[in-house]
Image (cartoon, rainbow, N blue to C red; front, side, top):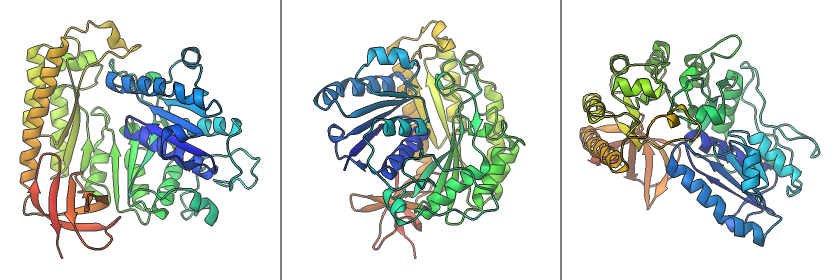
Amino acid sequence: MPLYYVWNIGCQMNAADARRVEEGLEAMGFRRAPQIEQADVIVLNTCVVRQSAEDRVWGRLHSLKPVKRRNPTAFLALMGCAVGDPKALAAQFPYVDAFIRPSDVEGLLRAVEQSGLAPAAPARCGSERSGEPRTLPQPVPLSEPCPSDEGEDSRAAVPPSPVSRGITAIYGCNHRCTYCIVRLRRGGETSRPVADIVREACQTAERGAREVVLLGQNVDAYGRDLNPPQDLADLLYAVHEVEGIYRIRFLTSHPGDLSPRVIQAVRDLPKVCEHFELPVQSGDDGVLRRMGRTYTAAEYRALVAAIREAVPGAAIATDIIVGFPGETEEAFQNTYRLLEEIRFDAVHVAAYSVRPGTPAERLPDDVPPDEKERRRKAVDDLQKRIVGEINRALVGQAVEVLVEGQKKGRWFGRTRTNKLVFFEGAGDWLGRLAQVRITWAGPWSLVGEVTP
């Protein structure tokens, strides 16, 4: 039986794409290899948003050259945001068999089929003859019930879903942030039909998922390109009706596009978690303008205030880039003060790195590396203190935890506000909602005990 190995790095959309690749390969008759060197099909699903991620991608790809030399019939595919110019990449990496654009799962599966490595396998997603092209699930009308799998064989071919599953709602981005390579690699915004997403949510619920995360580079732009136009709130209401799903999240939001209607949906829909991923990137208006962001620091503060007024207790996470071209010490202090004031539940901070082909590449990278690192560490230290204080306030309280698995003998899961909680408990808690009283709190996780 042929084996596959999928190596993945990057955002949650990449993780969702990797999962779809794995499910497609399983449905074709492949099984997962314990090690990458043993695989007949190797897929590297890549990210180049940061220099550190890009370095890991090229290092991994170079490490597979001797693997291909030992096993020349193995099929090696490079997929994702590292695939800019396939012809140039083919010249640089002649031992790679296919270069696949981001999220083109169907293209990857077709390339594997054309390689001749795919065994005879049960038809998947509605194909009844093995000679027909295999396709991904197609949209179904909202009035139809959740479709089931095509029999026991195809259901067994797909590995069990995790408790929380990402579902891509919209591809690409229409914003022109000067530092970002996403638009160059993923293109403009393309929304999936509501019915298509509801169908996938139904299928994941039938396979054991209890939480869905609606994904997009700019998920708040969802539906503007559909006919008739819809928005993210419409999608939240539709997915809310899926039986078996306990929780719904969405990410990532753009501060210029998050609408009052979406905030109201979070307030009004019991399944939608009180959790917003809302990247600010900088607290300085001059830096925001050079970044191509479409809001000011004051407008961002007002948006956070509106969220907290409508959804008391909501968790808000953000992204910060330090050391962007032209970021003076005063500009950095504006960001630092914004973080102190808003008190985010999570801050993902990165030092700026030049992305070839982006408009910011033309700006002088004038913040020295050691100064970038000092600022990054200052943000990290501040956030560790803030989130430690936020989490310690939960000690003694009971929180609802959706249990995702076990680690070192303890169950773990997340609160509605996306805080990681560990607890001990007899029996099988996987996929269940547990009421857990918090007994210890650190900056990155909580520990508690199940309440009766």
